[in-house]
Amino acid sequence: MSLTRVVLSSGRSIELTELRMSSTYGGMLEGYPCAPVNDMKINALIRGAQRAYPTTRVHLIPPQRDYPGQDGGAFGPVEVLPAVGCVGAFCSSPVDQSHDPALYRSRLTLVWFQPAPTPPSGHEADAGLLGLAWEELAQDDEL
Image (cartoon, rainbow, N blue to C red; front, side):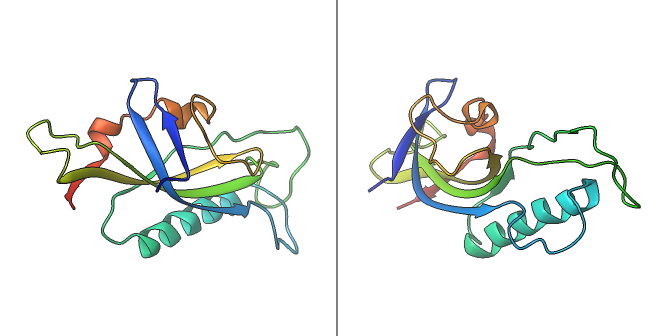
């Protein structure tokens, strides 16, 4: 059973089967959001997704990085990512048309950031998620 379905701009429907969300800057006790900190946060989400889904390809949807114009410090200007980091396991019909849809599913684990803690649904999702090239990134697995 899927949590929700997302319709990509290509028209392909993908199912979200598991979703993990976390506060991008939750637990940050000192310092400030900047490129080095954000890169560490992104890489940590990717590594966590790879550990959680070792048999599925993991793909990062590059996040929007905002620069509010505040002075930074030794690590450069203030750079802010969206408030919620997401890791989602998605599946769909097979990518390879020769695979029997009753026996195969395509799978892909996605890492992305979004402004609010709401699951993507239908045509309502991050533009990077909706524009995803599923056929190039997902892999078919036999059930």
